[in-house]
Amino acid sequence: PEIIHFTYFNEKNFYSTNAKKVITEYDLIKEKFYKENYKDQIEYKKKIFDKVDQIICISENTKKDLEEYYKIDKSKISVIYLATNKDKSFRSKHLNIRPYILYVGSRGRYKNFYNAIKAYSKSEKIISHFDFVCFGGGAFSQKEKDLFKDLKIDPKNIHHFSGDKLDLNYFYHKARVFIFPSMYEGFGIPLLEAMNMDCPVICSNTSSFPEVVNDSAIFIDPKSIESIKSEMEKLVFDDQLLLKLKKKGNDNLEKYSWKKCAQETEKLYKNII
Image (cartoon, rainbow, N blue to C red; front, side, top):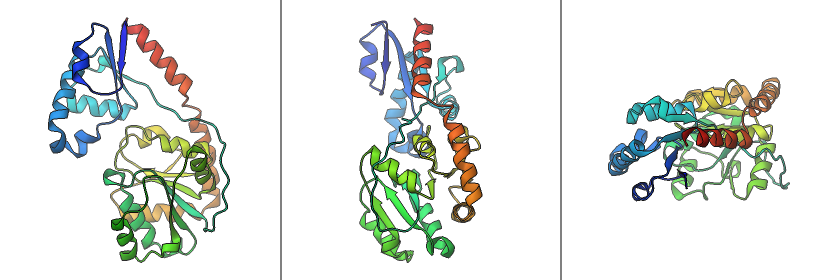
């Protein structure tokens, strides 16, 4: 082959070919949060970055982080945005729950679920009107159940569901808002998934979030439980603001497509041959 596009860091493969080499870097979570645990992996990533002809980053923020941690020349890095499937199909359900705030995906570590649920528990105003739904990420652990109990969250007000894309689309479609309180994301596809289903977004003001959503979401300080609480309260009871965010979300979504992602990747291939 003239080009090999690697999708993971595997050093031995780089010695076995004279083809042009491209690699995609999605995020620098290990470097930013768990550096001491991944010293060896970070060292061999540095060797690989030295050998490749081009690095694709999925956001300007990931590019900035890559330059900062690995001191890579800017000319070697290209930013190509991801997208989401814009199919609005969903599988209807009959659920015996109140209107709800939606959280999607993994709940561990930097995903910052604990601060979000603590903020929910501290708002009597929200708890009296809204449930909290988690989709995916595995069933609630005993540690999480103990936390809910300590926070005095009524078990009937917090729910976990799982399923496929059609199920997820339903929960986005029916949610009052989607909250994404993560400390860091390389891109954040759930932001676009929610917007595609006309679900207003509350998200962190860190990493790639402002870049990806532009002005189509409400921002929170993910480290501040009070910030999360106050912004949730502002949004869930404001019908006009919710409608405004739905419109802005749809407008923002037009900037992203898998076709555009493919075309820009093809152009990069042609440029390095």
